[in-house]
Image 1 (tube, rainbow, N blue to C red):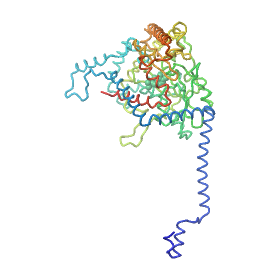
Image 2 (tube, helix red, strand yellow):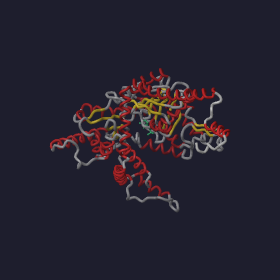
Image 3 (cartoon, protein in one colour):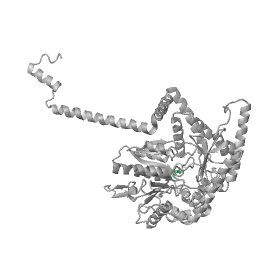
Image 4 (cartoon, rainbow, N blue to C red):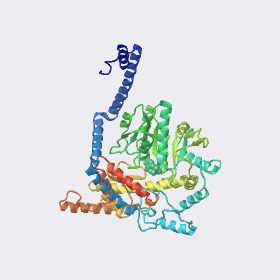
Length: 568
Ligand SMILES: *Cc1c(COP(=O)(O)O)cnc(C)c1O
C-alpha cells in the first residue's frame, strides 16, 4: 500500500496486524466454524424436511404439477403488469365496476351523507325505513332466493323482535349488569352441545357467525399446538370444498394450508391424501357436514379415525348442517356419523343463524374439552383499563341477539326442528329426484355426489351452466353459481319449500330454451357462443375467471364490489 510504506517499521507491523487479526485462540476458530456448520446443518435439515414432506404429500408428479401451476400463475401475474396490458385491464375492470354501480347504488334516491341538523321525528324515520325495506330486491319472501333467509315466518320474526327489544342495551361483557343474557348465552351453548352429543366436560362459546366460529376453532388449534408441542409453523389440511372461512383463518393467523381434492363421484375429501399431508407441523384436520358448494358430507368417520391415530385435532364444520344434521335420522332420512360420538372430533361449528332459525349474528363453536376452549380466550392481566378477559374476537357484543337466539330455540323446540328438517330436506330430495329421473333435466343436468341434507349442486352436461344461472335470474330466481367445476347450487330453506315445484318447472323451461338456442347455433354453424349473444353476469364473471391462470383481475373486481358496498 502506498500510504503505509513511509511508516516506521513498528507501526507498520501493528497496522498490518490490525488489518488481518491472527487468531490468538484456536478454540475460538473451531467454535465459530462449528456454529456456522450447525446453523447450516439446521438450514439444510429444515429444507430437506420440507421437500420430503412435499414429496410425501403430493407425490413427484403432484409436486411438479404444483410447481408448474405456480410458475404459470406468477408469469401471468407479470404479464398483467406489463405497461400496455395493465392500463387495458384496469380500464375493463373500471367499466365492469361502473356497470355494477348502476345496479347496486341506484341514483334515484335521496342520499343522506351528513347528520340531519335537527333529528327527524319518529314518524319520519319510520316512513323512510319502510321505503328502505321495500327497495327493489330479490324476492326472498316468495322463496326466490337460495339460502339467505332460512325461516322468515311472521310469528317467529315477531317474537325475535320482541326478545331483541327487551335486551337492546344488553352486553354480555358485563354479566353482573345483564345476568339474564349470561344465562341465555350459556343455555344456548348447552342446548347445541346436547344436540351434537357432546360428552361430559365438553364446552362451547357463542359467536357472531359461522366465520367467527371457524376462526376461533382454528385459533384454538394453533394455540394448543404451540403450547403443547411447540409448533411455530402451523399447518392445516383442508378439503378443497371446505368453507373459505378456513382460508381466512389461514391468512389471519398465519396457518399454512394444504388443500385436498374432493373427486367425483362422491365429491368427498380424499382421506388417503389427507393422511399423506400430515406432518409434525399439522395443527388441525377439517371435514364439512355438509360443505357449502355441493352440500356433501365428508367421510367424517374416516377423518376421525385418522385424527385419533395421528393425535391431531379434527374440526367438523356443521355451520350449514346446523340444526338439520342432528335431525336427519329422526326424520327418517339417510344419515352418516358426524358429531362428538366420533372420538376424533374435537371441535364443531354450528350456526344457530342458519337452520337454527335465529336472527343473523348468531353461531356457536363447540369443543370436546374445556381446556381446548381456553385456547380461544384472550386475557390481559396488565392493561391500564383493568384486568381484561373476553372469550373470543369481539369485545362488546349484542346481548339482544343472544336473547333473540334463545327465544328462537325455545319457541321452535325439538318438534319444530324435526318438522322443519322433514319439510326442507324432503323438498330438496323431491327436487333432486326431478333432476335425476325426469326429462329434460335428467338428460342435461347432473347432481354432484349424493347430497344428504338441504343443498344440492348440479352441473350441465352440454350447456353452459352459467347461462342457465343467468336465465334463472331473469325469471327472478337467485341461485348460487359455483366454480371448479362450473355448477349451480340451491340451498333449500323454509321459504323455498313452498315453491320448489315452480322452481323445478322454471328450471325445465330454462333448460329447454337453452337447448333450443344451442340447436340454432349448431344450425348456423357457430361452434361456440357468438360475441353478439347477450352474456349474463354469472357467465361473464365465471366464463372469464375460469380460464385465468392468475386471478388478480377477479380480485380487483371483487375489491371494487366491496368498495361499492360502502358507496353512500
Ligand atoms: C355459511 C357457512 C359458513 C360460514 O358462515 P357465516 O355465518 O356466513 O360466516 C361456514 N361453513 C359453511 C359450510 C357454511 O355454509
